[in-house]
Image (cartoon, rainbow, N blue to C red; front, side):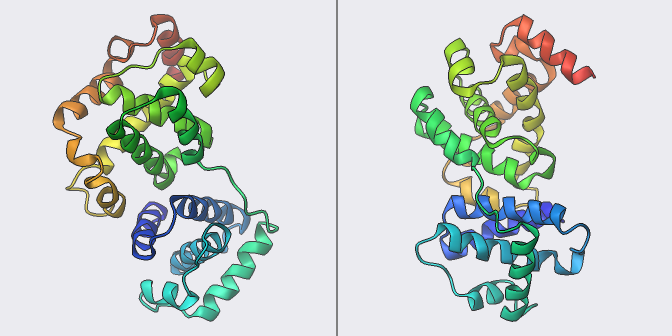
Length: 251
């Protein structure tokens, strides 16, 4: 349910032309609220939570904020603006008004300066970052780790393997083994979310379809699957680093 809701928020973002940072913060607030409110959020009011988090993040990030009535309408009027205001108070109280959070896209912009990817690679890296925000099994990774994984995996997908020690040690601040194991955990989700036959998760795919996913071919999918199955032989990473990564995965 959380994954479907997060993808639906991408539809709302598109509808209101909201910033990527607004949506990223909304999903962050939603996850933190689910933990902080300790079971008081049910299936019946999960959509209300998501919409309210987007309403809050809009006020935090946007110059022009949609009216609260717009959020009611886009949700099909299944709740009222008073419901949103009440949920807003509950969220702010549960989070102690601690709303700020770093975004993976912010780190990605910084990494772009060092990696200098082409437009296609950069758009695919952005797609990977947003896959991580939708997919709950990837939500525990730090934004900096998500961004590093995204730019590395996107570069690899389109024919460039990043192996610079300076990049890993001074920019990503990750060892190769950690990034390798993290990238492998992303592969299935990156492929599945781009699949047009996946009808439950569609808004994120539509967002990036024209930008890059039209160029994400079966050849690229096969390359990612080979990376997942066979490891360093297809990754360009050192065998020593890969051994460490595989040891981590085996635990």
